[in-house]
Length: 64
Image (cartoon, rainbow, N blue to C red; front, side, top):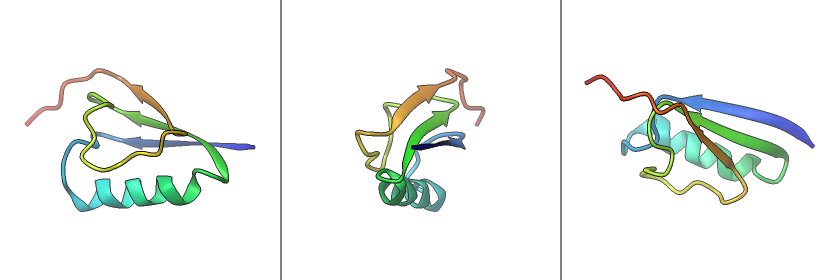
């Protein structure tokens, strides 16, 4: 199975990019071995992330 890494600053905001990433992860979950890489806490996602997606956090605080 091909591997795919998706990098995004954060999945915690209820924004459009986060929604699109969540939808793409759901579409791709059966075709790829996916790793979601985020800067902040990966367990604090506003949108649903499929269970098959590996989640990795860099633990970098977001600058506001």
